[in-house]
Length: 321
Image (cartoon, rainbow, N blue to C red; front, side, top):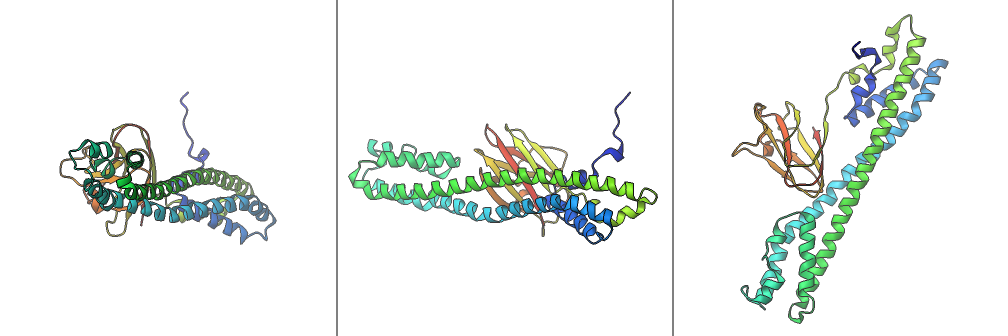
């Protein structure tokens, strides 16, 4: 006998709230409010007292995640600004100062900056921090460049602290999201428990149950949050969606050592075609990107991501209106 899923045995609350925490928050709050407004009925009071703790736990977790996400871009912006300074004005200034003491072709210069400015202008965050650390060591004991070494040490400390703060916040966000998902599932199961109680109460006229459920919200199932784990340089399909280039943006969070690229295709191919637009998402960042810079159009609305390099990258993308 084949195992078939019966529609009535599905947790339809879980299906409606899965991967959409904002919608879940609206559904749980509205359901809780409708129960509260009818709690003069002793049965409904019992259901309200059962469900309300689930709603409050989810709401508290949802507010925490929203707060962490809203404050994270500030930390990310600081790191981006420091990296931009490092790749342009800082390394240029230090290199010029070093060349006033040692010509570029000399062994002394090559022992200090063996790869010229390149390690400070490209590569992962860890590689750039390592390059700064190596420069500090190379300048150690050189009296002529003692002032430059002090600048490098100071900049390294500022950048390292900013990166650690950013990574700590990403870890806090991930921990909070895991807890939020747990609370969402518990609240979904709590709603299903009350649903069962309401069926028992109104089994002779099931239409009466509709008054307690936000049907318009439950039927608004449009996923706006996508997560993927990348472990190689292979294209990963995320979604197909008609979006509004003037109103919608993609919020992208990358956790890992590698950058990730994002692009839209026409759906016929999963490859980034020559001369087509794409965006590179740096490792350990949280930023928002416009659709136009990723090549979105009415006939190019299939979105793909691909990691650059080996290792593991965790990608979270949210469609924001």
